[in-house]
Image (cartoon, rainbow, N blue to C red):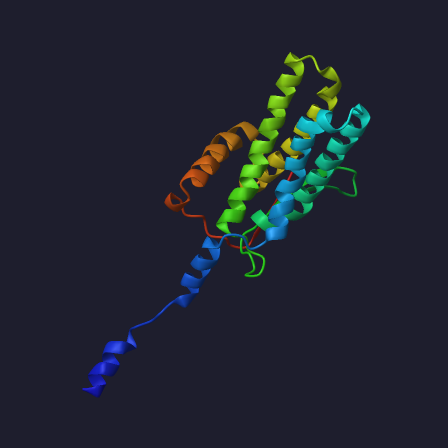
Length: 213
């Protein structure tokens, strides 16, 4: 009888690692500071642009404040929040011959203390996509309302935020330089994954991929 019990239980194995990893990925926010600053500067720039006329009559003061917020957002998203919240990084370097190379890097196996959750990844991509669209709306509203003095600031907002969006899309899609093909496949996928996160399974993260252009 004892031998039978032993035989019945020998093949039983419990894999708690996958359950712990799944629970970790389902967690809400693991990096609250990075998540906060990913949205803080870009949302502050938009709100300041909309409301600066109510609080100040100085065009130069408003212009400099919004441009400073946009610059801080560009630096923080490019150098900090993209790496922490999405495991992505891009930059430009010049070799010994003076040639410029764009490097797109994706971390495929995040360390347990560095990995981002699904909620953080969704916040990262939604903030990265929606805010440039808002600045594009500002561009057309500035043209139609003939407030041309704000045009340079709006173009700066579009340029800085679109640069980060373009760089991170290339990181995500493996450094493919064909932006029309990349966006046509990536943006709908991001929207559907955000709307129905349980219907999509994230690809396995393995190794470190570096793509150089």
